[in-house]
Amino acid sequence: MRFLKLPRSIRQLSSYVLAIALGVVLTVSTLQVLPSQAEPAPPVTGDTSPVIAQRQSPATAAIASTSFVTAAVNRVGSAVVRIDTERTITRRVDPFMEDPFFRRFFGDGFSQQIPSEQLRGLGSGFIIDKSGLVMTNAHVVDKADKVTVRLKDGRTFEGKVKGIDEVTDLAVVKINAGNDLPVAPLGSSSNVQVGDWAIAVGNPLGFDNTVTLGIISTLKRSSAQVGISDKRLDFIQTDAAINPGNSGGPLLNGQGEVIGINTAIRPDAMGIGFAIPIDKAKAIAAQLQRDGKVAHPYLGVQMLTLTPELAKQNNTDPNSPIQIPEISGVFVMRVVPNSPAASAGIRRGDVILQVDGKAITSAEQLQNVVEDSRLGQVLQVKVQRGNQTQQLSIRTAELQNAS
Image 1 (cartoon, rainbow, N blue to C red):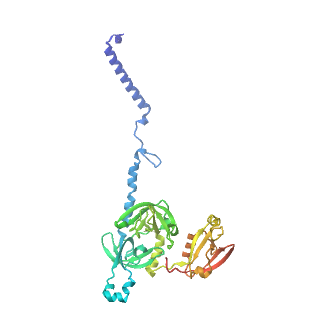
Image 2 (spheres, rainbow, N blue to C red; image 1 turned 90 degrees about the vertical axis):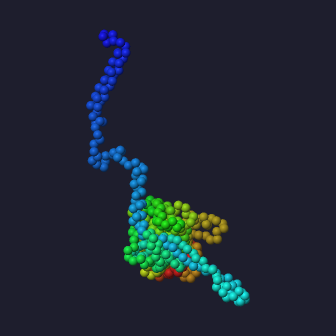
Image 3 (cartoon, rainbow, N blue to C red; image 1 turned 135 degrees about the vertical axis):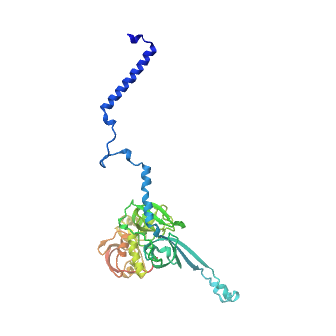
């Protein structure tokens, strides 16, 4: 009753104090009932306990993941070289200038003033041996009168071309710089998988010491698919930028090992680059160093992969000059005169079905079988000619001119 007799303002203040006190009591009670929520998190004792607060942010993880590129480039960068070439060409002499009347009128000295032209080229390469062996593309140094090799540290040396193989677009150049040269670590292209990191190093468009990053987009891309029928290669395809001047430089994996040799061969291939597998390059380089050239066996046919669908499409065309068996194999489009195939009796329109008892279903497969054979080896070739099959013996010979 005394509480009711107090002034109204005092009664309101007392109510507020009572409410605050009650809230404090309830909070303390809750903490006592659920002590685990107030305790610190227990220490992590195993990999299975997820601790979200300790995870890296996506931005931090992305920054950390790029460090492997720096490590890879530092491992091989000093062994990557720039190759400058010079070639002197003389313009073709006009037959009119060889006319005796012309020479008497203008004098013999006039014809001797025919101007020459200096063609300069630029490419890349990398040192594969401390003795000064440099690997590059054949088209970088082919027909060059002078080859200059420039190291990353600024030293320059005159290079001597030890050997060129146009078929695989590989060359070996020798420089005399002592035995203290940096060497690029060579990996294995047989271990490369689609999706692996790919790092291209070289001098594209004259910009020295340039690095680009991408992935391996496909493997065993045949030279025929790329559009260069005079080569015998299965390329590594990458989306790492490869431009003119990158030719001959190394393609690296994430560990800084050379897995391929960059080759700029398709000016219209935007965002696609090609590299020669290093396993192939190793074998070719050894032969070039020893013999200066590589002997490639050949049959002498221009061919096309044939499928039943393609043959049917041809046969239903009323303007088709020839009917093709609707089977799988390799269609002979042309036989090179005086070639092993011509001597063995291969004809245009034949379909190659087997070689030494092994079924042949694509032109790339046939090319690989021939490339892996020995010079002078006799291959047993089964062909379909019209409605009949024939067995022919073809002795391989050396390919003299890649073009």
